[in-house]
Image (cartoon, rainbow, N blue to C red; front, side, top):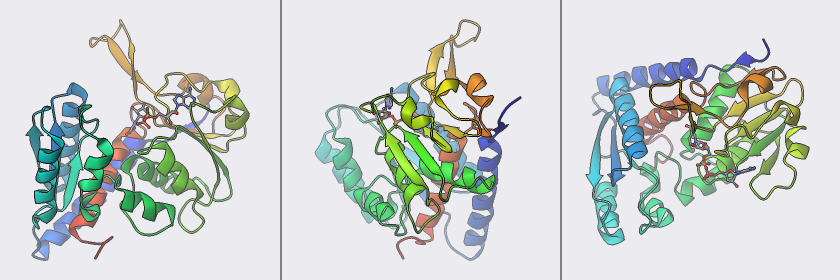
Amino acid sequence: MGGEIIDGKKVAELVRQSVREDVEQWVKKGNRAPFLQVVLVGDDPASVVYTGTKTKACRDVGIDTNTLELQDTISAKELKGIITDLNNDDSVDGILVQMPLPSHLSQYDVIESIDHRKDVDGFHPMNVGRLSIDQPCFRSCTPAGVMELFKYYSIPVKSKHAVVVGASNIVGSPMAVMLSRENSTGKATTTICHKFTRDLTTHTIHADILVVAAGQPNLIKAEMVKEGVVVVDVGINRVADETSEKGYKLVGDVDFESVRKKASWITPVPGGVGPMTVAMLMKNTLLAAKKSIYP
Ligand code: NAD
């Protein structure tokens, strides 16, 4: 037994159902369907799978989309030119450039060239900045999905001690910001850990809520957490598995079986945070089409 399972698949489907209904209403009122432009540079197999999952999810909720497939030799200037055209195109509501980019392109420059009003990934400095001062913005999909899970399961966050392991720009940092803001949903006392943190356990052991996004299989073990902790495992790692047809399986950053015994709530991998990320992207695209964040 042990902690209850936070079912991200179920909650993601509820979010998607609500977006589907809103899109239907929006179109019934005479508006065109929201449109998400996905941009894929190169043919990295994981990126091809991710963009495929996102466009399929869009169509499933009535959002129009297509993927612009660009050669991995494209220059920064050419790519920025394409993004500028998309920024100026009124029929495009959301722009998603799939990361990572080939090494000759600066991720930061490319993100900054996207109009922040179309930045449905929530990565643009304008959105990141507004998040940090508690203003309406497009919120990074993965941490926004985690906050949605807390809300759905009525897991209290306010005044709790939240510990985030991982400090990347797309997951760990915005997660810590969302948990810690005083005026929005968070209101938790928040500690952020990263690869330079000395003795991780001295922090994780005090967590009421532990969000792990480090990309390190089995980083968090039972002896590192206290009884009753809420554990959210964002990690997605491929590890060799001879019993599987593919030769690998997906695991998170948390030793699920042992940690579950001490946890009050825990997300599985897969089926935890992953489906929420895509669902929140749908939500952001609808908000972009309705100009709800930036009227
Ligand atoms: P990243 O590599 O950009 O960042 C990893 C972070 O973890 C860094 O801040 C690093 O300092 C920290 N870290 C690494 N090793 C550590 C250690 N031993 N102790 C403490 N901190 C450590 O990765 P990311 O893009 O933030 O992704 C993190 C994980 O989440 C990956 O497994 C990724 O696949 C997964 N992910 C999942 C989703 C989802 O939808 N579920 C979305 C994005 C990323």
